[in-house]
Image (cartoon, rainbow, N blue to C red):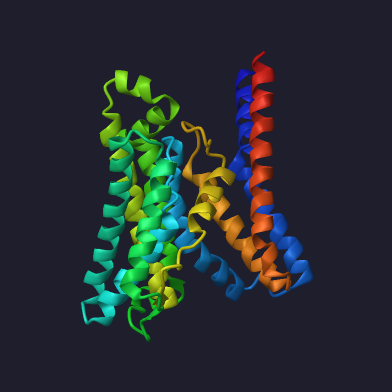
Length: 325
């Protein structure tokens, strides 16, 4: 009886978890959209969804680390614009494409470390600090490009065009690698334990011997590395960059994290939910396009989905409190 009750408890926990709820949402959206437009469940559409998910997914991986640790980076969109423009300028100037890409990743890490360091130096919320630094990154990108789009004219396409066994896109595998990396980091490393400890109670984490300030910079550096690789893949796929290339991505990434069940107060969450959140947002965007719905409604649906996710989380926490008495 005890084993049966334990199994039922585990099953109930899985069925009421945020990732499972999102999985059901994804299935529902797929069925409804495909019923209206039978071209939705085809390889070309799946390819479109995954292409959008690659860049957003890697950025959301970094945002998951920050949100669980109790921090936010809203300079991400501007950072993407600065990084992609820098890589495009370096490649067009004749620099080796791989080296230019790695320098772009390094630039994102530097910008993220600056964000974390300034929040420590000024003892200010990371949201306010990154609001300021985002404006600076945007201005630098505009000055570098003079406001013009940087087009690569077919260069740097090897990342987006490479396919394993002639069919599986390299970018999709890198998306999965990014999520697996963050999953293992959060579940099985000391850094992961520090993420949850600081997000739950930074003072208690400090008193237990964790160097909170150093960890904060480390978390931002990890996020910056993931953003940098996302920029590489985005530039390879689009073959163009401008200062506004990443506009809105920070909100989409944080939205995917929240939809995935991570607490905006820190200390709770995981990257599995974020993965399904990213897929759902990318699928909604594609569905709106295929159903010929006015694109102006896209962010309306994004906001609605985030509110529904918050409502589900609130109801789940209320049920747990009520059960515990």
